[in-house]
Length: 142
Length: 142
DNA sequence: TTGACATCGTTGCACGTGCAACGATATTGA
DNA sequence: TCAATATCGTTGCACGTGCAACGATGTCAA
Image (tube, rainbow over all chains, first blue to last red):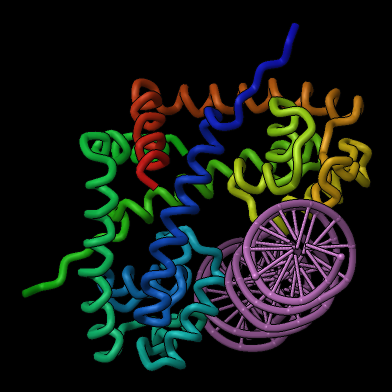
């Protein structure tokens, strides 16, 4: 039997290509405007909604290896965007929290992020909600 | 005004997480069973449907930087899965082609790939086609 | 109390990647 | 004809990442 296989219609490939293009474009935007990498942006975005939180928690919630979180946090601290303080209850934990400067930065980025999302949704048209549903389904069944 | 932002419902983030999980799981499968990386798999998959083809062409068609294609091709040649021959018409081009051994390998991988895709589609249920449509829409509007 | 084990965050290391530069070859235009 | 320019594939390099190992701290059971 003849082997038929079309990479272009292979779902994992389509997903990977779409994702890397979207990420690259978005990453370029906030790298240029704010000097941030993707892990740094994820850490900030989580802190703004979760308050003071440990590296471990971010690692678990945001799909980043703990070493990535650790290094992102180190850079963010060096830039004055977050503070790192040992947890008084549990000396193993390090609490990360936004500084005022960091919060101001995040509040600049969020509108840019939302606008980029809106551009994506405009490109997707009525498929936008389908995409969200499908991705949510994948998330649930992991 | 209070800033509201939920990373979990941010589309680029959802897309990135879903994609990296799918890719990681799939990559692990054919790394373990066949010793292949993602770029190598893409090169093989393209060769099986396109015949003898240049590095440049694969680079353009398969969303891989040409250095990645070049290195993947070097490894595949070392493993005896493809041949690299200079194009007689244009000395700058290198034609890549599957060897018999490479073709036999690809014919082993394809069923595994299709099965993994089927598992994904099973998880997605009736959202599978939505996802395909949405990804196609993103592809078109790039 | 204390020893074994678990968890946290950091770090060393190997590796893959993106990007730019390079030599080699082709093409183009004067 | 030949100099300028473009294209192709490879490679050097800097950098980010995943993984494992580590020291420090905490937990738990004997």
